[in-house]
Image (cartoon, one colour):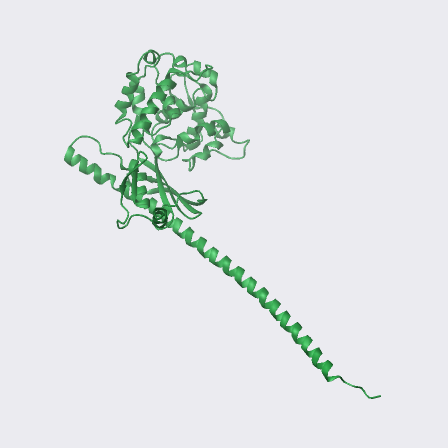
Length: 412
């Protein structure tokens, strides 16, 4: 039998196949187009984020360089003051570092909430996008646990901070033995030998007999470092240092070679410890140790002192010009505070000062939601960086100080 082929049907079948091929091609192209569009958007977003991160990094570096420039200028200012004035101390420029950074970042100067200077358009001032700020703190406002010197000097700095805190009831006696043991353990941790330190009833430092300083650490599986600490957190390894004590007093300590405690920048907690250790008379009544109230005479005096410090800081003035001025504050207290607070000036004066040797700078830069932070410690004498750490942060809530933003805000 002869097979009959319908030419018209065959042509129709070919058209159907072509339509399927075209639709399949369009589907594939649409998928490729969608993927290409998505990847393009991602690449653009990544490029924008990288650009913001780079801007934030260099903003932070700018703030850090401003701090370094100001610190390095201190010697020149000191020499100029000595040459032209003969006597007197030059101002500590690091106190003004934050304001210098503000001028460079925003092209303006704000003082006491008022814009007193507009330098927009000046060459080298202002940023296009984002902003930066700078905070400089005195590391000398803390007690140096690695401070060089005699055992008596280190003990005299650390003991007042912990006395009455390790064993509150013992503050009523002449010596808080548990606090003394904690300080001796810190001293043993950083000294070079394995001998256990002790203090006799006359206040003399001696070497205790027995198994040595590592007997307490054998149960933990480590030994005393017998070297200076790298971080304050290392104190948590010392026998007798509890989490509560570290959380309360960790910020009052530093591992850097600081000088006397800068009472212009020190916390009221640290100043109270130093003053109360120098009280002549009943320290329990003067400082409230072991009592059920927190409004002791020393606390009232510290509240007045802190108010004065805040006012002078707002005016960029040092609260106390020198240690004699600080001690004079405690000798001029009004009634009835002066009846409870009488300080031993010879004991307090060697502990305190008003100059800063080591500074901690925190430089932050941001652009968009990208933030970069540099934390560094610098020695004013050598101008060397002792510590440097960089980290990122979410800058979504930071104010954009960029010139482009300022101009846009002015245009109605």
